[in-house]
Each structure stands twice: as C-alpha cells, then as structure tokens.
Amino acid sequence: MKHLRPSNSKHQTSGLGFFEILITLMTAGILVMLVVNVYSAVGPEATGVVDRRNAKIIIATHRQAVMAGASFSADTRDEIIRELFNGVRPRGIFRDRIFRVSGLDLDALSRAARFLSIEDGGSLEFDPQASQPAM
Image (tube, rainbow, N blue to C red; front, side):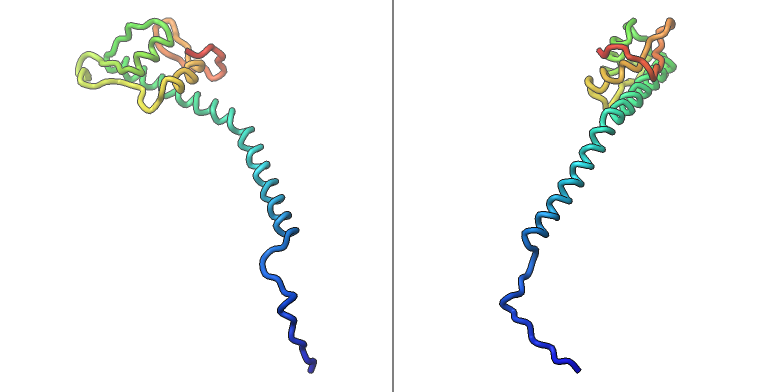
C-alpha cells in the first residue's frame, strides 16, 4: 500500500485563474455576437410579417364594418384607415357598435398601409408584394 503525502495547502488555489476567466469571457462574447447577428438578420423579416398581419386585420375590420352597414366618407386608402383608427359606427341593428382597429398605433397602421390597395368599389384589398408609400 502506498503512502500518500499530505498536500501542502499553501500552494492550492480556489476559484478560477486569469486564463480560465479570459477564455470564459471570450466564449460568452462570441455567443453574444452570434445571437446579435442572427437577430439582426431576422428583425426586418419579422417586421414585414407583422405589417402584413396588421394589414389583414385592417381589411377584416373594414369588411365587418361594411357588412354591418357602416358607410365610409373617405375615398382613399389612407383616409379609410384613419376612419377605422378613430372608429366607424354602422347603421341598422349594429348602430350601437363601433368598429375600430384596436391595438395598433398610427405608426403600425402606416407600415401596414403599404400592403393595402383600394378597389373600384371602395373595398380594401391585401397586396402582399405592394410597395406603395406609407401614410
């Protein structure tokens, strides 16, 4: 059986040394750079998806208001969107209701407006490839 020498406690260190900390910080920095790079590539595409979804919400609200008997005094796309932002009151049995695009601010509405076009009958239509200028 071997005899083990007791270690000298004066030479033992606890915790991480300089190089271990340096390697850890460099690894964390590389991971942060990767995450930022991925996020910056996804950000504009995600914004476009949200704007398209908001355009569909505007169209749905417009169609519901028209079906309920609301009449719009506006003739242009941007004016119709403003009326929906402020709220439109229909006539008939739904006269107590107000149709409004809720949860969207004017900035979100203006970004979504580029995906909307107005047809001859005054109805809003979705155009996913549209590049019309915003409000």
